Image (cartoon, rainbow, N blue to C red):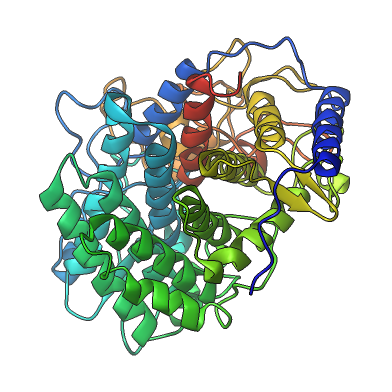
Length: 518
């Protein structure tokens, strides 16, 4: 028999209050501006607008607000006789990488599902659908295969070209039973399953197609196990190597499929296959491993927060699944490392200015994903009722402490930082003007119809002039571990944006835009 869920007691309440007070003191001492008042709704609109700038394919007439972009990649896939037009460019180049794109769709879906109910979700759903439509194509193009990449990054990076001008080879790459990619296939299954939940009521036919495809792709990922980093190493690495392996994606995908099938089941039986898979395979796929980062590569802690949600939903309904209790325990360990005053808090992972710092290149991706997980977990704890909190050593931490830490990270991005600079382009008075992004740095096709050739474009990369086009809503890689930032296109580690940085931020901004932190 598992021990009872830790709930409020007089001693635990004192500890939780101390943890919350410590969080507030830490955040203030680290440069937090308690008086800062940001327009989170405006930031949310801009964060979603960024995805329109990243679109590949035929842009939708009347539904493309980023007017300096044009059609691109219309013949993608033609070299293999398939249609792979559409989808997203992941960052500042013109490659379509399947692993980060799928993660982007998963996190956009989760963001909208968790924090954007009703009509306010229209822009979020449009962003999800643009990516999901492409993933459906990639999964259905040929039997027993999944297309996972368009273009060789080694060739693409030899040019600095607008997407509308690109003439580098658009080779396509797929995983097969002989050249498996359980990591990218698992993430694709997760993305399609999460998207199916999002469209379940507003477009049932589309949702069913997404779910059916997700199930097929998951079966493919699980039956033909292996890492795409091994199968496609020359084009996947070092750009998006699956350093964590593929076990995390298999468990992550099973979790999303459990959520999706449980939501569509009338009798509750159809979800059992994925729940049984989690029970049977969780130990071997990382269920008992603690991890402290969440990204396009490593899904372990994200899976624990997601399955904790399933566990806590059972608590709220008066019936808990003790087999999922393990995931809440590990989710608690992760959260405790982030909350000042909690047992397990790791202060060394924060900059002097209070920013979570985990990686020198594109660190903001970890900031936004962490803020999202904290808020999603806080949401699950609050929804469970009954005083369910986070267990940290001998004490507990309330959901409000998680919200406080997440808010500090979001506010830092928007300008509450030592440099008083917004790291979201186009938000606030001071933001990066030299973004490592081909389309933003060069005059648009509308303003400069003549083609700008491969080598000619590098003068824009190295130019000190501000971007020709403001990449509104893009969150750049961000400052270093000392809160220092150099606004230069050549400094890709700090000035390159990405879709997978923005996707979880959409959820966090939606949470704060709704005023739920007050």
